[in-house]
Every structure is written in structure tokens, then in C-alpha cells.
Length: 230
Ligand SMILES: [Zn+2]
Ligand SMILES: [Zn+2]
Image (cartoon, rainbow, N blue to C red):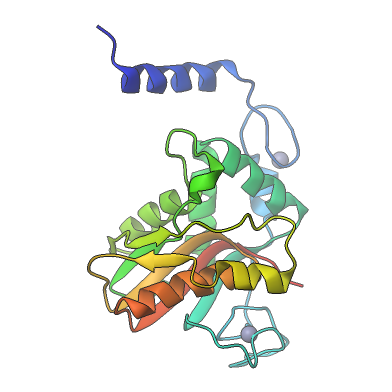
């Protein structure tokens, strides 16, 4: 008798043992992320824009990036700037379910982002087009562990509607494409932390927060591992 689930898990375990371990940022051997690269992840420090989390010269309530934009979320806090090292980190984390990377991402978020005041934690759901391997979805993993650390419950009301691929679209096209790209089902708590891996233009977080607001959430705070800082 065979057990497909257990066989797949066993193959994953064996592959983890057989594949050479090397740092996903600097390629040094021995570990999935070396201590130097972990220490070098570019933490985002205050002062920040209170609303969109962009680093600013002094604390502001609106900034050049978010002023004049209608946003469905109340705030954004990200742990690190999306630079080349973080890009390699995120690409490797999306590609393979590496425990060291998940642990590193959680630990930097806990170090940088103050514990939010909310009822529950949720996450931006995976894109069904992307052919997820073994259900691996870094934002969900991040949300699960953060919920546990912050002693909040984890909820998963968001679903994606079918949308065009984001790659190759301009910033304005991306915004239009993801607007209305999500729907929330079932009970939605009043205040939520919405977790994603990377905050880029804010279009995805805004569309997801907007679906949560339509379903009854009154306040959505976005927390991501990385944030693009232009
Ligand atoms: Zn390294
Ligand atoms: Zn701002």
C-alpha cells in the first residue's frame, strides 16, 4: 500500500538532504541563508509615512507616494527594503519551501514591525494560474507564524478572481488589472492584518483590502516582508 501524501513528503525530505545547501543571496555553502546575509537584510527604520510605510525624512501622515490615492488599507509596515539581496531571497523562497528562509522572514518582521492591534491575521491568497507546488505559498506561511507570535487568530476569507498576468503590465495597468481581483467569503473580523510577501505598487494590497472592507472589515493594516522603495 502506498500513501501519496506521505511519499511526496518523504521525497521532499530526501531532496532536502541531498541538495547542497547554499546561501540564496551570496551562494556561500553550508546554509540556505548565511548569518552575514541575514544581518545585512536592509531593515526599514522610522521615520516613515504613517499611511504607506515609505521611509521619509521625518514622520508624516501622507507622502509623495500615497498622497491623493484612495487606499482601502489604513497602514503598511514592511520589514525590509526590496533590494537585490531581498529579490534573490524572495525568488528562492517562492520557488522552494526552505525552512530557514521562512524563519528568517518571520524573525525580521517581528524585529521591525510593532505588534499590530487587530482581531485577526489574514493573507493575500495565491494566484491559481501560478501552478503552486505542494501548496507552498510564502504569504500564508508568514501569516500563520505571525498570527501565532502575535496571539491573533488566522482567517482566510479571500479568494482571487481570474485576472490577466501582472508581468509586463505598466503600473497603471497593474492597478486596473487587480482592482476587483479579490472577493471575501464568510465571516470577516472587524479589524485585520493583511500579510503579503512584497509590497510593490500597493495595487494588490489595496484590491485585497477593498474586498475585506466590502465584506465587513472596518480597518485593514498591511504587513509585508519587503517593500519596494523608489
Ligand atoms: Zn550569504
Ligand atoms: Zn505614504
